[in-house]
Length: 133
Image 1: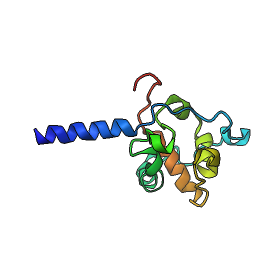
Image 2: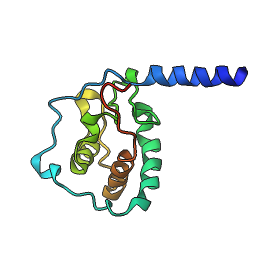
Image 3: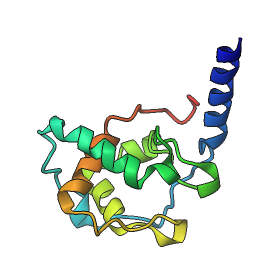
């Protein structure tokens, strides 16, 4: 009984923390040069676990462990089509530059390949349709 309660409590806590109401910033657009920029690690899936470690170290505070976004941080739900349908180049640009208007810091101090690893990890997140949550 206690184990069932603990599981239920964890599920409720996770759903409260998810940012179901996330709406992308229509003004946060990557330049054309970033759109088609290829991920140099795209053919190296063995780099993905490193991307997960970097995500857990740098991104989880706002985006949560599952990438669903923390409501009180107003962070993006990284599983939504609005995010997952963006090119690798756009995601890299957004990680690099951040969005100060929405509280997203720049991670330009991370080496390029580490930022590309984060993009690889983001591609492993479950893809959620807007209405499936």
